[in-house]
Image (cartoon, rainbow, N blue to C red; front, side, top):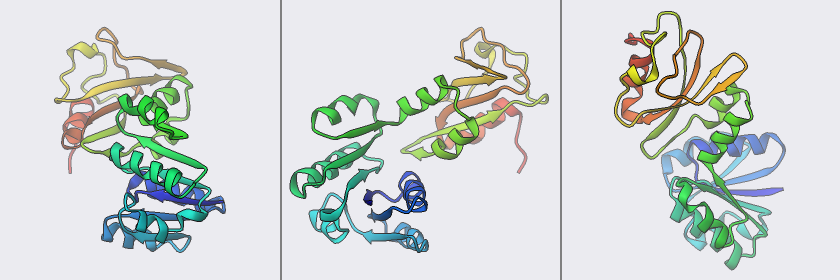
Length: 222
């Protein structure tokens, strides 16, 4: 299968490598020349340095022979435009789009995107299905815009062990999404008591990652 991926960031490059390892032919379109050079170091991947919203870049990347076009940039408007161009202008039969803002998912579907992928919903589904958090972290620990999803394993030395969540002071714009405790998945509430060996999934801003780790694990040295 020939797959064209628009966006060579963390999501796009990881997706491309995974598909290439399954013997698909993969081309990435990426605006940033430095990122393009880094991706091109992998001999399995073809890279076009250009704007995937420009039909000329899509043509250069071989969109006419693509079985699937996946737009996975950090901009929903770009992802929508790329998929619509691929479908209406070049007749690509299947389009996949990353949806960064969950409120746009319905719009993507209404405008003809075959597979809109809502990242927030993926994470929620993974939590509900008790998927391996090691795999979730590898695949879904990403930074988009100013947000970061992180995993934190509480140790006996953690200053929050034994405390109610409502009594834990977190940095601004930070929230605990879920707690894995043994075989249980716990949705954090104010009266939830944190325990040693709790695996916590949290969302914070990139600039507050260190503060979040300090708050939950104690001050990190180095």
